[in-house]
Length: 294
Image (cartoon, rainbow, N blue to C red; front, side):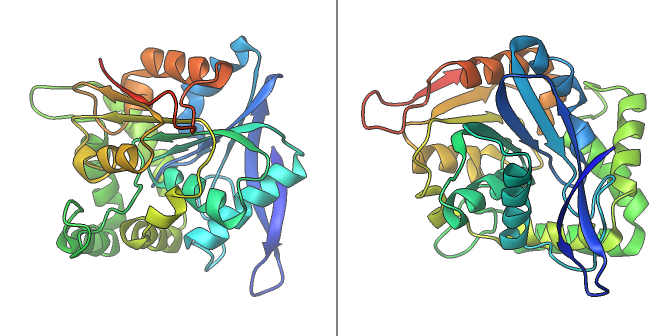
């Protein structure tokens, strides 16, 4: 397995980030969602390299095979970890793809590190621009929702993760877009994470305001969100991100849940490949961005 070192913990031990690096060509860095790991991108790691793309997927600190330090789970540190990854692998003209929580890392990196080495960015079912409902963000999600998540994690993390997985993919009595085997695989991915990291990252994506971060994005941008997302509702996220970035390419997947990278994997892979390989989503005033309903 491949690792980079991003710092040391309070005991002086190295903090190592695990990553996969496959294919050759234009680099694409995939940033996973909560509470999973970089292996959630299995179907992208298997497909994108067929199209002359170099694909890097890493495990956020505290998750997957990466080190699990006690702290460092706020977005400034997570964006710094991403910076070290890009520098260590000497990646240039990168497309950053952030899913859910990972969209916050993309936004924070662009502001905190000036978009260095980045050619394009993509927000997939992302938590941007600001999930929490406040007086100046009335479309956000009520604090009580996040409080319940944290309480359930503290009481019985395993039970919460199994229930959350069904919501993630829109599983209900009438709809079974993923198999039980896939849900079991996601549970295994999530349960190996640090309990502390799972709690702290939930707090981070719930309360971090990325509205100013988005104003620093000046590269071609893709936004993809499902209009049936019950985990990160499109009204609180994708719609507002598209308003903040009016020249981005905005694709709404009709009927798609949060985990559309799997449930709509063929469509998603095609759209992502097309975005990386073509100059779409221009940040300049002309032409204006588009909204496409599938």
